[in-house]
Image 1 (cartoon, rainbow, N blue to C red):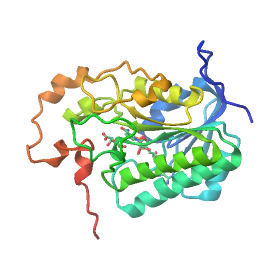
Image 2 (cartoon, protein in one colour; image 1 turned 90 degrees about the vertical axis):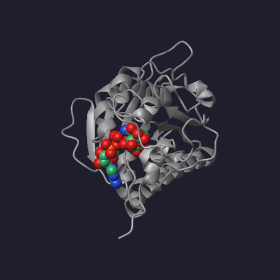
Image 3 (cartoon, rainbow, N blue to C red; image 1 turned 180 degrees about the vertical axis):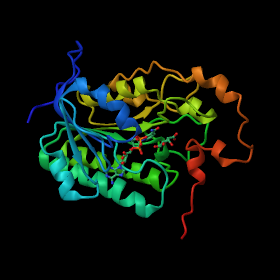
Length: 278
Ligand code: NAI
Ligand code: 15L
């Protein structure tokens, strides 16, 4: 199996032979498909849903992350993984369990069996969503998930820590804020991650040498921030975009009511989803 060519101090171009991206049919997967291609000889794209035909230097594998034998086959021959697949919003636990919890376990077991050395895991700010807005937190604070979705991301962070300590599989967990074309509300002015910065963050996470197990917040260079990335400084993630371009439009909208808890916690409206009772 080919090894990963890491980013060296003299900035040798980063590259690997076969890179797997799960969740390739989703919003971020569609954005990253062309952007990650230069970093691999072959980009293997996977999703539960159709991602369209494979282009040159692409492979397409339709796979449910909950299907362990399917995931084992999916990961064969892969050098590194960008794991975006799964349920990406708050949902009842029985929907989160197979895709996000069983799914991330299946992925790491497959990575272990096939000798994959590096995973970039799309965690989320919802793993720490119950910290108050305005409090600055680093990546060492205790997890405070704001729902079952956030709990599944906390599980993925812990699982990946175990697979590093026990098996030496390196992982960078990206606590992504809000990665969309625009910041749409006041909270997103703080949590927004532009697509150029997202791409830069993933490339650094894939190719910087010796990341071990690293947790990093994914936000652009916005005016205000709740997140301190000093413990992930070795990634050399230097965001360049800013949500200032959206401020006037966002601030022309009425603010949330003073008693709306979506305005109190970092996870925003996710903190008030549920309970899910039939
Ligand atoms: P998305 O919902 O658009 O894409 C997720 C993809 O995963 C979908 O294409 C879906 O078909 C696939 N998927 C769902 N269940 C699956 C299963 N059982 N097996 C295989 N594939 C399955 O989400 P988006 O926005 O592209 O996010 C990508 C990743 O980044 C997700 O893991 C999400 O939790 C995470 N993230 C995204 C943020 C954002 O602002 N877009 C913020 C924080 C985290
Ligand atoms: C997430 O984790 C979600 O995947 C995304 O859809 C947004 O809701 C984002 O967090 C956010 O917090 O804005």
